[in-house]
Image (cartoon, rainbow, N blue to C red; front, side, top):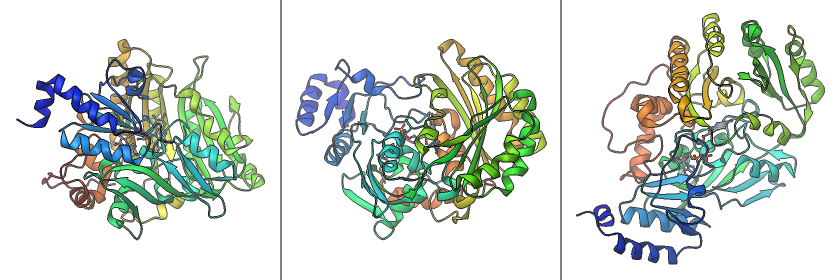
Length: 473
Ligand code: FAD
């Protein structure tokens, strides 16, 4: 009889075991019925409704070590929550032990060295607030409630990526608790293989209790959006795909099909220019003068204000189903499909975003970090978001149909952080997320987590022996 069976067979004995475990902790151990249990098991995607046997709200690395040892010794599934934003809901296990890092929010900025050490439960709001107090920032997600941890471990796309690289390109070191319960530091000259894998390989290798980042001076940016009616989206995107070929690294553009609060479908071209503001004004003039926008909010603003701009469009608790793929470019036919697709959108919350890539992030070698999609021109993200369970079939159907229609125009790659639940995506999509770096990631996984203790993620199974041909990226 294995220990997992013993747990199920003997609830009374388990109660004692759990009580003993909780005595050695600094953080709170929650079980069903405890105050705070339901709030702690909730994540950003309202479709996720899982019930861990226990949730450990960690106070520090020692709690994480103890939790990993406990889960391993008792055959419990383990999940790790940073910011709780991942749409797959992998931060929450059904029946196992959830490591909740959200109480671990310490940040130490060293302005003179332009570095910051950030604990594993921080959000980008936490990080930006502390770093901007010193006029500093690093590339982070465009919605401030997203976790630093999950986002960085998958790569990290954001407004500053074309200028300063991905979030993971700015990672200097990470404190990691490994599957055998050791706390080690991964950096370029120590556990270099692990450090490589953490920069794009997701949560496969251990629990990162803190990250050290390189910071950059970031003052006011020129940011906001210029919006067009959906009927003009074709012309605007056709203009944009040429316009952004010649833009410098300090400008990032994200056009998005969205619905306004008064139910108008529009193409909102969101921008961030980080550099001398007069240069930005000049650079953005052709875009702002193109045709007749229905709105133009582009202005000089603090970086944190731009970071907050899109947040109202992403309320927590909505039901979410996303599909994503990198694009090789934006041809006429792809534009037609996207415009026609948004005409049919069944929810006013749903959106389609096209994230401009290129710039600094594309000049890093594909094998330099585990993130391997550096040559893609842009990333397509189809976001199904709606409030009620009744809408599930129509909303999921819309996302799938549109993504299917776009298949002739996508590269073979997908961003690991936008993947949904593995049962829905399938093993090939997970592999496509790791692209040409998959085999090397598999080696690192076998070295640091041969028993696949960290399997509730976009998983690299150490027992995998199937050969696979990486599709064109
Ligand atoms: P969680 O759900 O807490 O964690 C996701 C997974 O990461 C976990 O299952 C675990 O495997 C792993 N993990 C988390 N913390 C740790 C840790 N400390 N140690 C080890 N493993 C850990 N991505 C971008 O790149 N750019 C964006 O601008 C962006 N915007 C987004 C906006 C919204 C509204 C949402 C919902 C997502 C966005 N994303 C973006 C995707 C985002 O990068 C992923 O959802 C990411 O996983 C979120 O990290 P988290 O810590 O909040 O997630």
